[in-house]
Image (cartoon, rainbow, N blue to C red; front, side, top):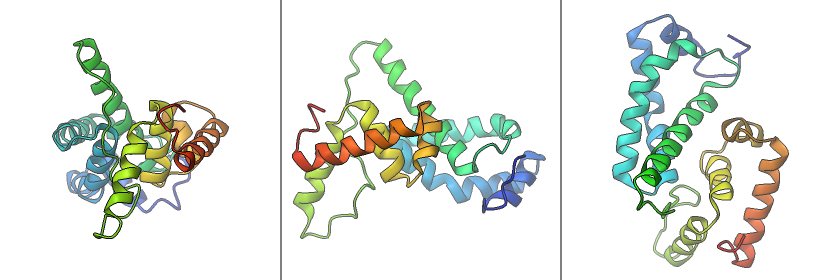
Length: 181
């Protein structure tokens, strides 16, 4: 593994990669909410998030041994979740009637407290109207708090592309033209 000295999961991860079931279970327990939350942010559906989280947990059993430590575990994990969500979108498109419907991007703003319900609804609606490339960047950077480099690695683009997309997301949200951006 590469230098994972700053990775809080390093010890558990090393044990899980070595085949220790308790360590693997502890990793899943530690990161399940992240897996489910990102899936929900990307799909907009609790039911889809439930299915994807279950699939990702099963996939991790197979893939944990291939973790090489070239990225932080959370970045690698977000990549797996992102790919699972992308695969779901592709499968649905192949069946015909799937439309772009990432409706609610939970987690980009604090939960509404009654006073800001309108603003929260507006933000979710505006994010949902963004083109997929911008929405994906916003979910990974703002929703999952990944760095631009980590998001770029997951999306397979240059870090500068993520920086540009986030600049454009801020511009579109501030001018209200997210659907046209």
